[in-house]
Image 1 (cartoon, rainbow, N blue to C red):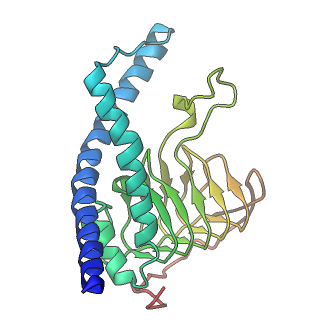
Image 2 (cartoon, helix red, strand yellow):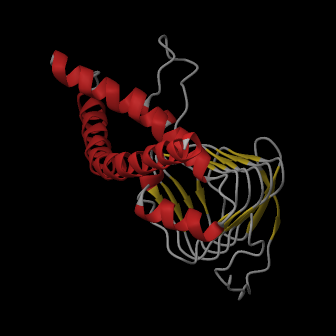
Length: 248
């Protein structure tokens, strides 16, 4: 009897979390688009006028709502994504990523276990492979072309703190989208920083850190990553959109 009650409680919690995350992620998808547009407008105004633009002070109720959304619900979302990443089925993970966390991916997008995806509603990919234990910071959008492959433990960041900021804040020059072109290969344990475009067919070698754009078909290595050679441009391979390891 007690065992049945425990099972029902667990199922109720899981169902509630799925419903809450479905609503929250859809809401945040819309809100993030407005935030990005607003930030670009403020930055353009700052550049044109040459002075910082102060944002209007928010009312108390609105500040409380934003605090709950950005701290409590966002924290729950991150925890939920990490838990989903431990489910031993790529098929189930893909369904939850698409229909609960609003990731713009398809059935052909393979994401292996142990990945953490922040602001998943800002991730776009189709026929790609993301290996295990990757961290994708999609707060300012991550977009993949076709046949992109990420090795294990890749970290992609779309914003970071400004070390020269008196308040250690995230400034506009320290945030921005990461775009990865068709057939690019991001090898294991690499890092890509904000505002980096990885060109078509480019390779980022293991343990490298990309701080600037990578040219198409260039092979890059080191910290910071520098071009060391050229890759063959006659690439014709197509990923099959299927997970190689069925329980991982």
